[in-house]
Image 1 (cartoon, one colour):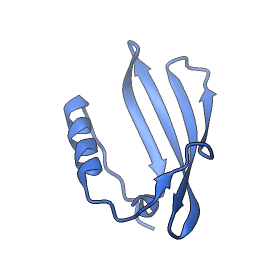
Image 2 (cartoon, rainbow, N blue to C red):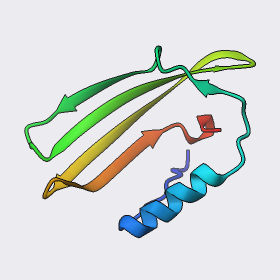
Image 3 (tube, helix red, strand yellow):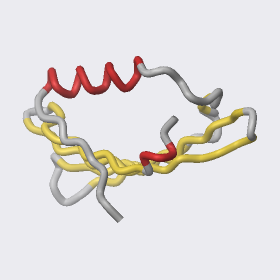
Amino acid sequence: MPQDHQELEGREEIRRAMAAYYERPATTERTVDVDRTRYVLHTTADPDVFVVEIDTAFDGPAGASDMSLVQIFRLRDGRIALLRDYFASDEVA
């Protein structure tokens, strides 16, 4: 199965890509159910690296659904230097 990923580098490139993502037309009527959404924060031996598991719960016309993702953060001087975001892109509406 081919790997579909996009690599963004630098603050402005990340801002442009995220803005374009959130400006696209919605293809679903799902809404996030904050009460059912959960996350787990994992620390590592490196104080500048942490991992977050997120299970986002949605409600919509077809009923409840979930989307799981994992994010890996690397900090430098207290700022995010690297963020890796892993999720099933076909689940993102």
